[in-house]
Image (tube, rainbow, N blue to C red):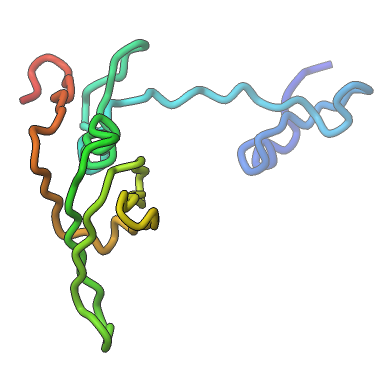
Length: 143
């Protein structure tokens, strides 16, 4: 008896072989080929044609990584808020506690108050002292 697939459209559509067994009553999952990973540009978009190699350090986002390198330093964060009738722009000054992809946490040492600031409102940041910065490593041939 031939081992032909009687309904190939189901294999393509659902990702299963239609031959059933007691262990796999709905057929065998097809082996999926893993997509090749590529390094990310600062924007988060893949760099076309550059393959990712295991162990390679690839920079995905600059701002939060720079901020994390400078935890504990006093910074000033300038933010604007669209469509706000009370205040359109605000300045926050404090000790940088931490930062993530979409937020910054500052603490005011004088009042003990903490601020959770959204990156979407961020205009720019200043610091009174030198900032720690490690430039991203890019694959050879990319500047």
